Length: 292
Image (cartoon, rainbow, N blue to C red):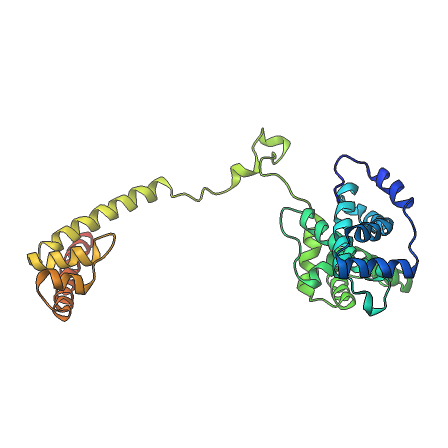
């Protein structure tokens, strides 16, 4: 059921003119949709309860979402309720639909409250929609008793009242106390247009790191080239094919080409690595001795 291009007042007026279903008619329509997938029955059932969806959507306007969007989410929840409703359970459709409508609206509000995901667990959702109300109630009760609640004490009482961990209260308090800001926004009037993004650290390597890395890489290549000259031609071939190719060859394929067993190729590889390690250690020791 699309709402684009229509005002929320139009929907409200149309919903208020919809028929009021008695229990028997509601039950008959629910059976027709569940058992026969009668779309006309589904449409009539949903249309009759759009006033309920709009009424519930209006309760969430204080979160800043457009009323049209809230009505759309409420209607989606209403349709989910109609699709899952079991008339054999003996409850009115409106009683069942309330939960689905509310859940759909709450999911939408939390998705669009902030670019940063506000809450995903049941305790965080409960806090998002109840924190301010519970906080106001506790503060009123404390004022009536003549008590002064400190911040930490108040957060502990909220956690106990809602039944959530204290850290969730502290997290949600921080999320609800501020809003999102663009990184392109200026930091202050005195900064002459300096934006917040200008103050972020550049994740790329700095000039001195680039030069140092390039020097180290060149040094390692020079050492490796010198170490490779210490190997026999056969050993160099094995190391090149096994370790320096983009797609290293297997011991079996090298053995077949060189007329040797797989185990012999492995032994030659081990010997070659030992020579390479010794040569590299000697070269690095010479550099350390020169630098000391």
